[in-house]
Image (cartoon, rainbow, N blue to C red; front, side, top):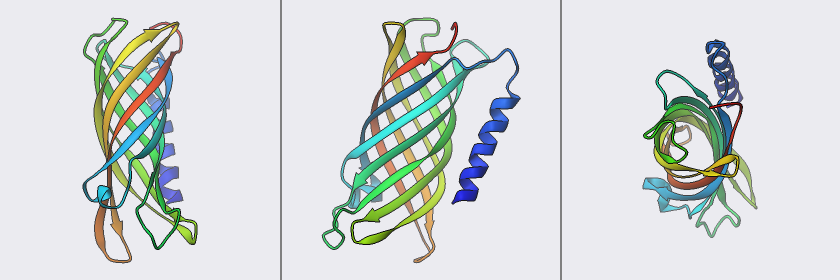
Length: 189
């Protein structure tokens, strides 16, 4: 797991350092919201929370942006045999977003992303277990001005893929999130 995380961070650093000198970070954001498990993940997990933080770099045509984002969430588990059981998905993603109304103070945007997800399971009476795998996601949001910053509300879907070594079966950690946050611009846009 640590090797995958180190590799993902190294790859992110290489991408950021290889961007042209005239490209600088447009801004950073933080946000949080609810996660609703889907698919097999919904069979045992309850609605939980997620947090996100990221940085974006405008590239190419106006409205196009590359970004890197970290996330952490938690969903409790319906498991009477293990009190306090929960899953904490977290990781790092890179992706691209596109504003459907570039240059405007408010408007819709869409995004897609891919990266690493760590799936950590823990309970009050049991040692924690972790697995990691690739994750993909995407969504749409609406940005709007609030003071010298921008607020945003977005819906996103995240799908992590894992292989369970103990049973040699594939499983997923998939959820829909509703995230509310604040974007802090860095320099002129």
